[in-house]
Length: 505
Image 1 (cartoon, rainbow, N blue to C red):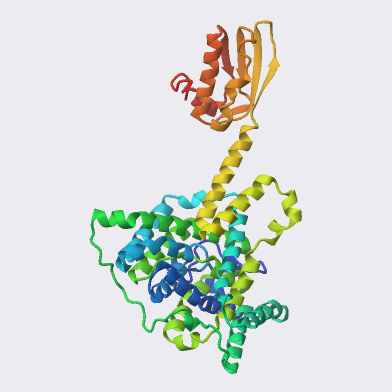
Image 2 (image 1 turned 180 degrees about the vertical axis):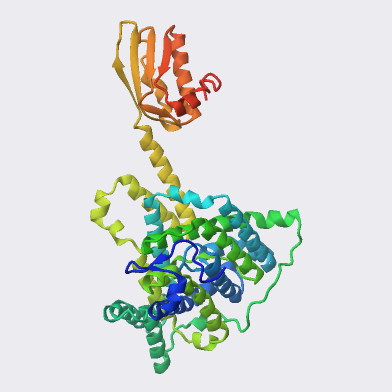
């Protein structure tokens, strides 16, 4: 596999032209965008990786090396060009207990097992489940992401020297005004450079990247975790590895879908899934804490910088390694105010402002607003995007089942003679709608022959078959005959279970 081999279809540029990696390498303008995008992302990755290492309870080098190996590996094997994968807060929260209770070797073993599980789950087709995530959950996911990106900056804005605030404001002003003058150089990079120059030249005493933690001085080395290969070890790392695999896949696939929408292009979700697994295997072998797609950094790369190919992803990892190992002393003087300004602008650009406008909320069905709100609130409270998405999907399923259940009706349509009555059942028949079906017939008042016409309905599960059996039983107990007609082929297949389930099932 090479950087010149696209994962799926070529990606779209903002002007509608299709861009492959090979074409980007031949276009100085496009290549400049990719290079500068990768550089901005690398600068933003450093404090994030250090802070996630602290959350996980490991040395900052573990998070930095994870970000480097994840980004470089996913550039080759991932299914979504221009998406950034690195150490993330969600993964840090999952693996923190195993690192704290059992040490770094068990953490690395967990990362390796999670990588294997991600590959297996992806090959089994887990990416296809993305089609069942409603748009309201996706909107809630995006809005929750914007809130989390912003709130993550608050520790850098509370209890700091007052000079931090004008520096952050200056960085934001640069990023707002510069794109109106020129887009040759990414505005976030210009803001970082200008704010850093001001701080260094004036000798301002404000928090810097170096204050976040010690930067590594050497390259990562290949290693294997020193853990016993026993069932007990598997019992220890298994639950954490499975949780890490699921959280990583969900966050990565949701991010890939978001980038698809932004770039108006398609990505290979299955390849992205197993690519994440491969990246975590590589990361674990080099002593990293594992990771997944980084939504904030991806937004910097795709939305703020305009990158569209694997080149920016690869260079983000490459620049990260060079910055922390070779240019660590220079990177250490970058004020956190500059990076905070970048991330605030990313959060503003990420939020779906249209979805929270009062006029939009008034027009949206209550169910859609509720699903979005549950996703946002759950994510913000837990700081875990996966939990928010899962709860949002559950609420959507419940509301959908409730709505569909009320679509079913039983109508008295004909009386061919005094001894016959015909009912028409209309709608979707499944566990939610068929539970009330039994109570919609007049067992005592109906004549001796009853015909139930299912021509305008569809049987979807055994609960409906059991409900029809119960209806027939109630009529027989009254000494009346029941005939069920109008079954289409799928419904007939289900109705063959009639009499084998029992009326109580």
